[in-house]
Image (tube, rainbow, N blue to C red; front, side):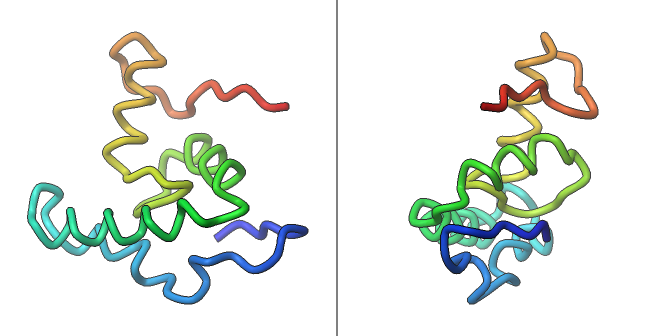
Length: 95
């Protein structure tokens, strides 16, 4: 996990396994959906959501929920941004 500093504690640090649990279930299972929903609720309160999401989009090998996005959502975003072709990294505006 990348280190984000300066805005207080990371809410995901209290239960890091929750954010990685999605990989233990088939992506369309009820368990996976419930895990993603719960992780996203925590992400919504996180002061590092933007930085975390950028990191995850720039790191296609990361698994689980990052920055409020599931693996599948990040994959779909990369495909959309690349015109339907899967890219290794997503073009992300910084600033």
